[in-house]
Each structure stands twice: as C-alpha cells, then as structure tokens.
Image (cartoon, rainbow, N blue to C red):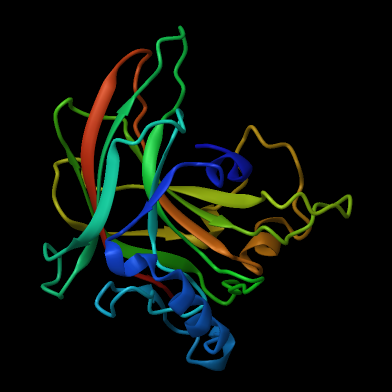
Length: 244
C-alpha cells in the first residue's frame, strides 16, 4: 500500500455524477459537524450507501475511487450497486484492473475506495473497538492472485510525530480477512490490529490511538499482489460500514 502522501496524488473519480457536487458538499459539511461522543458510542455508522451522495457520518465527503502503483492506471470506476448482502437499497461498487509494471520487482499495485473529511474536520474513533462492514471481492479476467489483500486505512493528516513535527501524511492500516470464493460476507477488524506500515519507521505521538483520535480519511483498497508484469481484475462491493 502506498504512503498517504502518494495516495493523495492518485488519479481519482467519483462514484457517480451525484458524488461530484463539491459546492453542495461544502455547505452540507459546514453545517453538519459530527462528534461520535455526542451520540450513543455503541455504534457509529460511517455509511450504508442508502442516503444519496453523502456518507451517513457527516464528517466525511462523498466516496471516490482510485488506483495506485502505478498512479497512471485509470482502469477503474465506482458507482452505487443494487447488489447487497442484507437486501438493503445499495452498496458501493469498485471495478478495476491492475497491471504490475515490468521492472523485475513487485510494485504492490491496487485500487480502492476512499472518503475524506474537509476543512480540518476530524472523527475521534478511540471510543470504539472494531470496524465492521459487508464486503465481496470478485476476481475477474485476468484472475486476481489468491493472495490479493483487502486493506483498511485511517488517515490522520493533522497528527504529530513524537518529535513534534506534523508531516501531514500519517495513517494506520489493517488487513481484513474476506471470503475468497467471490461471495458476500460480513467482515470485521479490531481497532487494536491497526498499525503503521512496516516500511514507515516514524513514531506517531500517542501511537495508533493518536492517529485514531484525529481521523480525516478512510480508504478500503485491494492490494492485488501481482507478480512482475502480470495483470489482475476484480470487483469490490462494500456496504454498512460501521464501528462498535
């Protein structure tokens, strides 16, 4: 998975025309600051995709889709889908194809779905213990490797390092186990399982909790795990993303 600074430079597209209403989003978010601790901390719904362009959690902007490694990859699209696990109105769907560049090494390319909180808004997730959602990852042609990963990351661009600096690209990530037989399933990951990427030796002030206290981005992405020069394609559906 890419460092946050590189992911933010990726090519992106929105999940349908209604998600491109940036001006409306600004007005909506400006009047809808959300604090998880002002409601029942038992459940925080991030999005069930049944409420139009905006996530159920008004801290965040409409979802976007992206690809990385290489950032020039534009073989992806995202949209609402009536195919759901629980019979609800919509899920969010990502269609993608990734090709690992021929360079005698694995580039760990992939594609994903993400949402950001604008204008310094943040979500404090430290009251919760786990993230849950419905997901289905279907392999297409060319077939994805069996080892393709489903990753979740929370970005915290305003978090500081233990040396007092604020680099603006900090995040924590976790891998999610999913059904490898192209079926829908309910998946979850404990917030205690999130960590900084192993390649990032920087120390976040407050550790993982220091980042989860200042969350302003969420990404769900497929890391294709393709061998050098190979291609893979798939469809990811997600639904009912919430914390408990």
